[in-house]
Length: 286
Image (cartoon, rainbow, N blue to C red; front, side):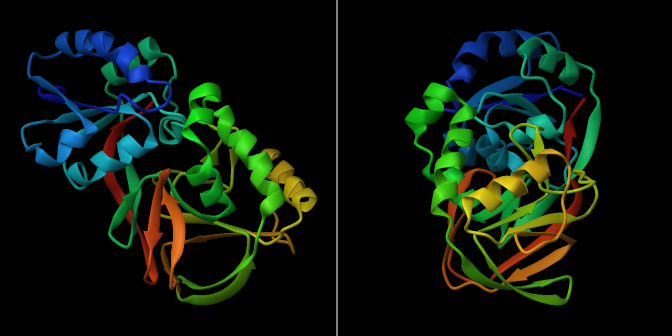
């Protein structure tokens, strides 16, 4: 592998780590092949990716999300060099935040085939969030992320916990109808949060063919913190405050909703259909 490499960068991601890493990444690729191209994420749409067997991303989860359509059901392999704020997919794949260690993992050529989610035609490797989860991702100022990095989301999480609002949702999970009032819903292929510190799913894997679903049903910040503590200590029980489910096929009734898909803000104006795409892309992992 790595006979022909495409390096896709987002120099604005995170604290602009991609700028610092550029030379070392090029030196690494040159050890394996002279057939490579370096492009900005905005140039990707204009490029024919057919010749490339490996696509390395230098950015965050949003950058990874944008290359997914070029990898789906192909033999191309995704390599992630985490340079964003969250880097949740990299964390789930047990990739290192240390550049040298991460390049060694890629060099070892350990390849994992993982699932994706299809959300109204949008591909997702991570999660789709509504309500509280969407507020944290979409409303945390970039200036705060530049200053505090991933800790900015933790700060925003505390602030938005005092602004929880419920909304009624109707959905069908694998043929079973559910009606629920929730202040937050998360649909996750990778259910990890805050790197790998917490997970909204039990026994959740990137290749298990299932979507983990989390409903937060309270607007009381104190109750919410107890739910969060339970998640931290790997205690997830259905209660008046939260519910946990798994499904392969989801239909969510919707007239208008703001959400995020893999950290990127989306406005979905029609009913939302989510499906698992089992073992769809290949990626380097530990």
